[in-house]
Amino acid sequence: MPDQVGGAPDFAPGHSRRQSRRMSLVEAMANVVVGFLLALLTQCAIFPLFGLSVSVADNLLISSIFTAVSLFRSYALRRLFETMRASRWE
Image (cartoon, rainbow, N blue to C red; front, side, top):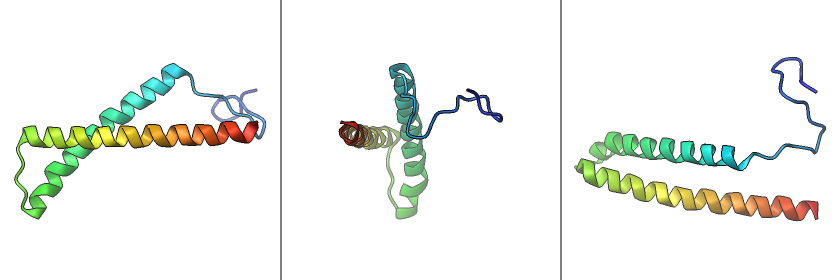
């Protein structure tokens, strides 16, 4: 049943809908792109404050490494929480 404000379905307490695999992929891709751009822009702004002169190519490489680490962390935490959620319902 839709709620009165946003038209979204109303779920009973303790019940939730799972995100589709497609939407999980879209969310993950958006997260990676935004994270990469944020890391790159942050480096370009912060490195000079510390007297670091880094080429664009090096900045891209550093951002890529940070992004890969972030992906691994995000995936590991998601799997951990999914395992905890699944074991709670068994």
